[in-house]
Length: 357
Image (cartoon, rainbow, N blue to C red; front, side, top):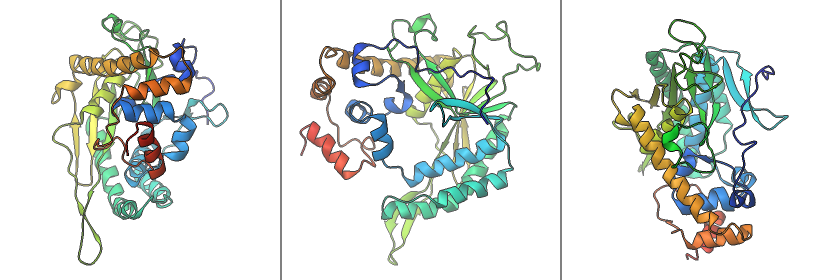
């Protein structure tokens, strides 16, 4: 049910938007937007509307499997899960009725079975991932257990950072649009003594709805397609937990840390069918306070650059702004993943815009 006595801070309302953002109908950035080069970002997040992205950009077996792993653990541990309210179309906190891990696994496997693969390769992956998802869930569960699950557990909390929420060191290095995100898991909003946190023990001084003990970002990795065997079946290369974390994942963690002024420890948990790996400030410099601040600054510079490109032409129409921006951005269609999964007709449309044959 919707928790009606809680007011969700909507990071996208009551925000004075620059002229270019109003004309282009964009109101925020995200870590996902940072992870792709400028041209792919312009096409996916500016040229396409949100409705078009949701309707036209295809999912895949890895994405669907990742959702199933996350949802299984949320159903097992969370007191509160933030979801889209079907009435208001806004993200709102809902009460979760917990179920056992075994029941969660079965529930999510049934959901995954309903996924329709986009092609033959994706179908092969779905078959393999149906085998791997239970093990990945159990390894992720072991990682959460090692981290020490502390009630209350909140999942998918929506956060927003901008010049008003960041400290003074970011005032001259902050994008006009807020950066939003949704946190996989945050544990506890009480201090170690079990007392409700007040401003005295909340070093940010921010009136946030909760000041958690720790933040956990969960990432999953799946076996990669190998060569076709003589019998026609597909081989797979088993994925192990990474020895070093992805920089894009670390930047995402920096956004979450920034919401509490980098005072809350952030953990990056990777789970595969063979095991799990936890990265934190003890074994990864990027998850220290200074490391997260530096990574957030890197992200900010990317977003500020994109804003400067668009703002040059904000006196013109939407289509003219996009046309001029295209002229200043290399299409980079050979990028290893930015254009992956793009339907052929959309990819052709993008190449036509950049006049690439």
